[in-house]
Length: 227
Ligand code: E4P
Image 1 (cartoon, helix red, strand yellow):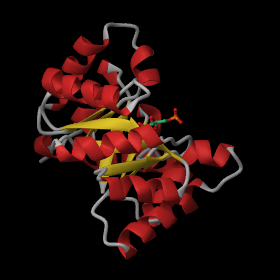
Image 2: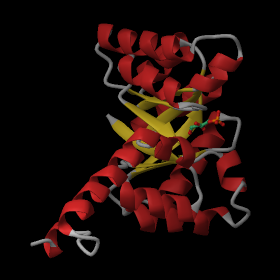
Image 3: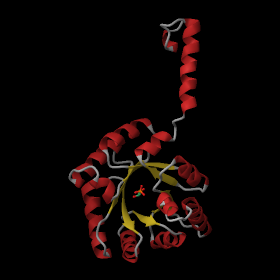
Image 4: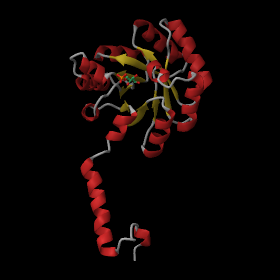
């Protein structure tokens, strides 16, 4: 299962990349503009933090296929490394995904709301699809069920496209897409950290140390210095 950071914040990426087994970073135009700095140096900084081996996902802005393809080629030349171009799953986007597949540029079809959008994108040659779990839930849909249906249809038709579930607002949604068989998930810094946080775990850890000191003495706070 791939675990990806959904952020362009340098400090968060540095911290999460150090502590967690992350496979890469996803961005989108909104995420990038939140950082309030020129986008190309920002993306290059992200690339240098995560190294050229980890996945970096960058989205095109243009509406028409030919322009999307030009942007994709530009981003590949400028950023390099293990790069995936995010293409919105419109008809023009599908056309761009087909062309980029022929050119050997890898893509992620983004803004996926239905299993059919995912199926068409996968058939066009997308390497990933990103169903927007929380945004589907907000539209009175069932984001986890959409992910489950996409995974099932890819399995049924033996499509190699992977499901990178996106747009989360809570850990229950993350848990759900995990059970639904998503190949990966991209989550913001706060949710990523909260995946391992539990108040009882914290108090257990404190209790272990207290019990140790009660027996071995107050100064013994490491197994290395305990006789
Ligand atoms: C993925 O890269 C998407 O752009 C992102 O997860 C969308 O998340 P949001 O619904 O929180 O904006």
